[in-house]
Length: 297
Ligand SMILES: Nc1ncnc2c1ncn2[C@@H]1O[C@H](COP(=O)(O)OP(=O)(O)OP(=O)(O)O)[C@@H](O)[C@H]1O
Image (cartoon, rainbow, N blue to C red; front, side, top):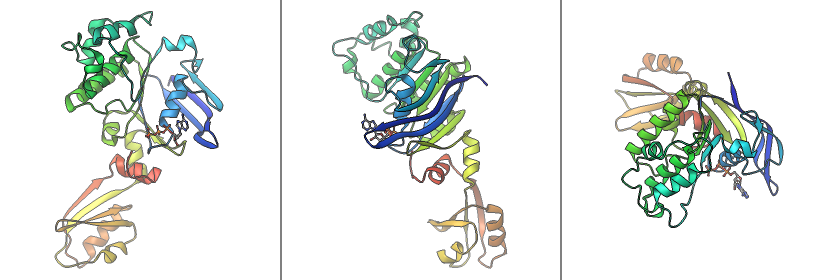
């Protein structure tokens, strides 16, 4: 495995509070890694330090074999941060040409307009684009220098379904060509679908990492949904070892369980007449909640 980024004992303090707290991290080359965590977990701070926009209070970060933030790295790295404002007055094509001019080996204007899906808007002022179009333009700006490493902070916010699909197709194609992709998102189903590797953060630390499959297995949560032919109160279900939540879904009961085999045995042997039984695997969201103690990304 080739390592694109390595951080050792990285700390960033703002005043007394640590936004990133003794974090060790490794990002593999050619992989799509999603950084997940609740608001304030330290994701943007971690990305900003990798980019050299923010200096760590202590610790070390090596990016593509160089210390983070060197001038030569800027030629090799592309970033799409949150809330990027387009400069006043410039048209879409002019802005992309300006970004191309910063790099030794840029992609062509045609390629960038293709990536953004903004051929028709090439002559429009960048400030007149819609929110989703501006995100697509920011993505093309990020790829202007044909970067080896691509960092994306909540890239798909404001993109419609079609733009998202196109975006992920481009990202997958870039990873297939050996580019390293790091992104943050609050859309856990999206992270589940596209990431090769997930790092979950909470309070400035890594709380879990692995493939989406590994993380879902780690939380070991399943749901069992069924009908009963008699009235059974929640307390009776809660008394089964391994059940940690009871929900009612219309006329059906849904149990959130840790040991489905055991719970199923109890259900089937009970006198409750459980039927129409359905067992589903945990979603990444369940793993996220179990591992970070928060409800949403
Ligand atoms: N420039 C700053 N000055 C002071 N505190 C900051 C600064 N930037 C971030 N913080 C604090 O550091 C912590 C981590 O913030 P950060 O933006 O990295 O979190 P995040 O995981 O990206 O959150 P979100 O999901 O909301 O984008 C927060 O408590 C935030 O208030």
